[in-house]
Length: 268
Image 1 (cartoon, rainbow, N blue to C red):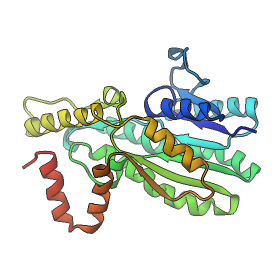
Image 2 (image 1 turned 135 degrees about the vertical axis):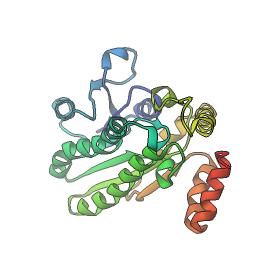
Image 3 (image 1 turned 120 degrees about the horizontal axis):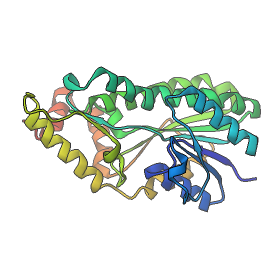
Image 4 (image 1 turned 90 degrees about the vertical axis):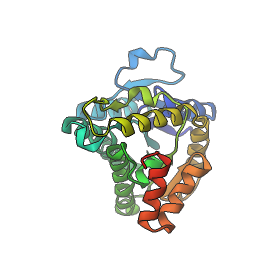
């Protein structure tokens, strides 16, 4: 029988690419969106779900189970970008980002665990970010939310060992998607002491996304993980230098690495 895969945020970008690729390979795919009616041409079913609203999580899981009676793979892909000087980002936006990028995936995981435990099998893939391995200037909130998801996955894995449920992180670098359009951008204020450097960094971030890799690369990585008997804890997918930056952080003195980042973002 085909494995049943649920992808949060499966209506566009990386989630859509993963869903279409898995469906081509014979998986039974369900995606989610806050507004499924906006995607009538989707190649796989899109179910209403807002990861910040518990009632929609419960309804979505129940709908998939009513049709398939199982969920073999959960891919926590729904997420939101956020940029700005930490000092100037409103608290409500910081909390909203964590609700989407951290608490949301946790609550979706909690909703599928009883089913996976009952069937004594399951795979949960959390889509994080290479940005979650380092505190990036003017992306600090995003780095923190994705880094938190990386760490809690490590704890979750150990707690789930008795139930034959696997969990892993996949950290993408920059991919050519519409993520920049959906980010919360703190406004560049004329009166801000960060105006010049934030404005320059923001343009660089958007350029990196526009020049990013093909999202199909992520889809190919995901199917390899699904077909792996014992997935690793962490995977990184993206351009060589983006992945290598994690290695550099591990081996270089903190201040040397900080200096490299500041040079990269033209902050000095």
